[in-house]
Structures are given as C-alpha cells and as structure tokens.
Length: 452
Image 1 (cartoon, rainbow, N blue to C red):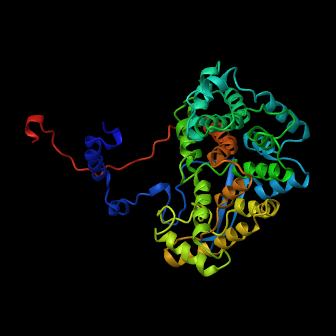
Image 2: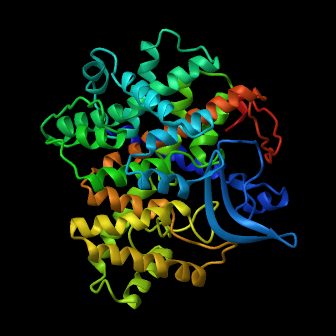
C-alpha cells in the first residue's frame, strides 16, 4: 500500500496545484506589490508604530538613504551600552533586558531583585506537566514540542482568555520563566525516546540566572564554565527583541489584533520562528560550515574559500539553495550590531575550547562573502554577517544540541513578543488585514455533466 505522499491522486493534483499557484512575476511589478512588505531596496512598508525597539541601518543625507553601521536600541537604550553595562558589573543581563522591554525603563537594584524573585516564583510547571505533556508522544522537532507545551498551558490557566493588560503581564511573566524548562525538558524527552539517551531531568536552581539554569538543566552533570554562562546570557540578551517587523513578532501583532488569547499568539510566533529563513538560520550556518570544512583542504587559502562560496551561490554546494547562510539581513546593510558584539566573545570561547582554526575560518568567510555576493549578484544595499552567523558556532562549541538552537532563540524572543503583544492590545487598533489583489480571470460555472 502506497503512503499518502506517493498516492497517485496526491501526486497528480500536486502538480496541478503547483501550476495553478504560479502568478506571473511581471504582475507584481505591474501592480507595484511590495513583496514581503518590503520595497526593492529592502526597506519595509510602514504598518505600525512601536516604542519597544529601534533598528538603525541608514541615515538620510540630502534626501537620500545612506547605509550606516547598524544600531539596535531597546526602549531607546543602545544594546551595546546594555551589554557593556552588565558585563562591567560582572553580572548576568538577560533578566534586566526582559524587564526593560516589558516595562520601559532600566530597573533599579530593588526592582531588579523583585523581578528576579518573581521570575523564580513562576518557574515551576503545573503538577505532572512534564510527564503528561512533554513526555507524552515526544516530538522530533523541539519547536513543535514547545508549541504543544504552550498550547497545553492554556488548559492550566484559570483565566486564559482575559486580555486585560494585568492578566497578559501575568501570563507573559510565567511564559518567560517557564520557556527554558519547556525547551530543555522537551529535548531531554526527545533524546531519551528517539536517541536512546539517559533521561535527565534537573530542577532549576534558585539564585541562578536563566542562562545558568539552562546549562544546569541541560547537562547531565550540571557543570558549566563562567564564560559559557556569560556568552549564553549575552546571546539571550541580543536575541530578545528586534523590532515589530521581524516575521515572528509581526505574526504576534497580526494574531493579537484579533484579540485571541496569549498562548495562541505565542504559538503563532513559534511557528514563524521555526522557519529556516528566520530562527532556524543558525542551524543552516553550522551545517554549511560542516560541509565547507570537508571540501576545503586549506582553511587559510582565500582562493579556495572564495571558490567554495561562489559554488554556494551557483547552487552547486551544500543544500543547493544558492544562499550563503548567515550573510545578509532584511534591514542591516553595513553591519549587524548583534553580530559585532557577539564576535568579540566568540574568539574567547574558541580559545577556551581549542577551536581557533575554526574561528579563523569563520572570520575569513565573514570577510570574503560580501565580495563574492557583490560580484555574483545585483544588490541594492550592503551585505554583512548577521547574528546567526556566529550564534550557531557558539552553541556548537558549547556542545548544545542542534535541536535546541531555535528554541534558545524562542527563550530569548518571548520577552519581545510579550512586549509587542501588550503594545498591540494597549493601542487597540483595527484587526490587521493587508490587501491582496486578485489577478484571476472570471469564468462561468459549468455543471458536472458538461465538464468532460
């Protein structure tokens, strides 16, 4: 018996669906459609206002848009200053970032202590949740596991559909606190049932940061170095928010505008983040470099590296997508500030892990790829490494499983999603509904007996 995938009916009509789904590319130009809600230069169509974060990628000079070094602000505070601030004080900063995004100002010492206590108090999952939900039919994909868990939490909420700001903040705090457990326990369940690994479930420890607890819960011996926890904390801080226009956050705005519940809005964002064009990109970077290291004999040879990158663009290497993963961004042109911040610490971690040769290969690709892309393709703005270029390498050096790369992004971004959901509800705009123009031809209805 043939599976559904090879069923003759499915095979035949899939081809028909493909043909019917094709729209002439010239029509997009004719009707000036902003595909991806962006113009040809990459500038996004303005669909909303936000005070949560700002991305700067260009300046206006004499009426022209001039690319500049990228900047990212959380509630008006430069992300570079935020990271420098908590590093100078030798403490972890992700929790502070969450507070800033949700409530609009940097917490003082008393507020930060109170906030950390509140997060710790909301960490515990409902009784038997791990057994009944996470370990029950464990998914092979951790993002789907995370989504399942979030939807199930709806059933444990005594007031799930109340969209008052106070209730949504209560739900947001709980999700920020519980996402690390949902992700790590989901992976442990997968590893046990699908990879025959020992089942290890560690309870998070009070007094540890979210980054420390992730490593504590994930590793069988619960051990980690200070540098590992510090870099993971920085990664969470850098991924926590990135404007209202990124795909998963815009999805949250769209779904929230219908006034659905918090859990449904978050799951919609998770579905978006799962895609390799969004949150799954860092896995592709690691896999691309794994292929590259096998096929380049001399990692110090610029010519050999350039040849491989050209083959990537020509769809002759790796996954034949024509992409150099980790290079380029929908908004940034000259630089992604998150990548620049991250890169400083990647070098230290590579030295600690004895992987300097790989770090140098990454550095060479970062330098050579923009030239290769510029020579091969017509581009309307600069191309530089984005944060995904280094994050996967960092997670790999820390021996974090690839299955958790995108969930780690979600653990960070739930803070931004929550802030944007609250902003959408507070401003109570119309339900989001952009226009689509029909370009089909009107045809008459024909009775079945006359269709042959």
